[in-house]
Image (tube, rainbow, N blue to C red; front, side):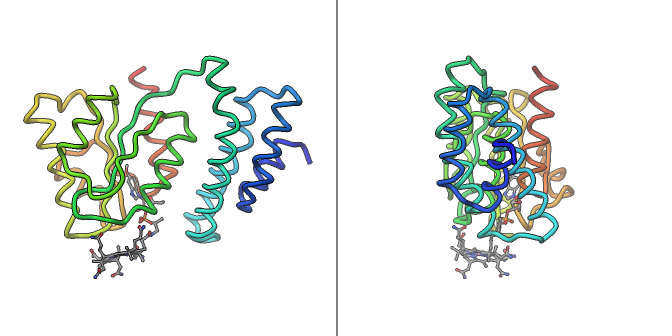
Length: 213
Ligand code: B1M
């Protein structure tokens, strides 16, 4: 099996140490870091995302794969920076105020980073002011909010209210997601996009970034 396919296969099995070793080996063999990233790590992560969507694998499988991807990316990162890869854009992400669920948000973060974004993760229990302050500070173009509780979903609208209050609404694309969130809810609060899973969130963010580039 070619080394790139091996990287993808080991990533899907969550074998972080093997992924790390193989990424280093591929770099030593002179393979383009972008090929290692896109055809090895990302291809594996996308595959896991699809299997997760189809309920062929479950949260623990996704988390170990995500960890393996992180280790692979850590090896690649200096090399990617060296070849002058510009990030696709900057994204601020967090779980909304009052909500401590972060597994889904972490997966979205992972997929966004995999897609080439620089991601600023504010963690959990994030209020509207913090979302907007951070987006302004880092020059982000997309704000992603996650909510897992019906009681915290309404806090997503506060970010939009805060943006409007500061005259910044048109500067940012606001994306929302999380198990209880729906496209209808997103429309009601004036968010730009709802996506139902981490893979589609990264795909949508990529489309948005390429459209506005
Ligand atoms: Co909580 N919890 N929980 N919980 N918990 C739920 C959400 C619940 C549905 C369980 C239930 O009753 N069936 C329920 C909510 C009910 C409701 O609101 N209708 C619930 C409750 C009630 C609570 C507490 C209130 C319980 C209590 O204390 N009485 C409490 C609240 C704490 C708080 O947040 N203030 C609580 C606590 C917890 C734990 C801390 C124990 C733990 C969280 C651990 C952690 O996250 N580190 C936990 C867990 C694990 C769950 C369940 C079991 C699993 C959630 C999860 O991680 N799913 C959950 C039941 C369930 O969902 N079946 C439940 C896997 C994850 C990959 O999926 O987060 O949906 P998800 O993310 C997906 C998509 O939604 C999407 O992409 C992800 C991957 O594809 N996505 C986005 C998510 N964010 C996105 C953002 C985007 C785009 C897509 O931005 C663009």
